[in-house]
Image (cartoon, rainbow, N blue to C red; front, side, top):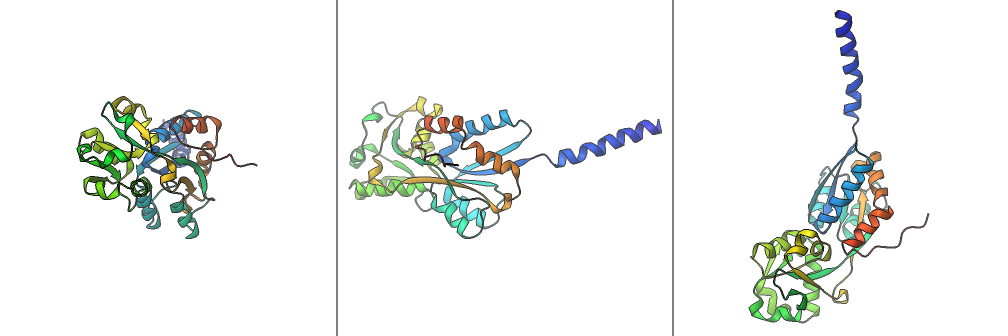
Length: 256
């Protein structure tokens, strides 16, 4: 009996390092990635079933602030590449800043005639409230303001704007009926959930600065092999095809 107990204890001790060494990462991702990234992670986990990948979605600007303050994120995907570039310049990145997509803005509504909307349509007070992301820290919100100003309707819509903390929050205002139209990400409008509820109209990208998006491995994850594997997964053919399906315009693949 004592021998059996000793063998059992020995086996348990052998198993402990394996449990402690289980690889895990936490990703901070811009909310326009909500549906696309969920699928990217699911495909990654099929190939690497032992790896743990958690993701938090939100405003790119808020994530940048949190990372500066030491938030425990291993990768950071931003809807505006300027944010990860600033972190890299501050010494808070463990990888080069990698462009992964260009986003597109759309007008989205649950109304049956939403596909005929234009920015000029928003000048009509009958449209009611218009949802955008907070331009102070959400890239899609900032570009929405630029587009409204370029279209010459800003002064007629400003008082009717409602602001979400992120672009997905702006979409939720429309879903709940608290806004009649949203200026949101094409990637969200193409998601199965929103596509069932309404239609969209692309906003010309000539009306705003580009929504160039990029990611980094953070300094916290400098020695994390799983973070590097996930970064490489973003360049895989099936990942790129998935991103295109959600309306993202992809940069040319880096030559090796």
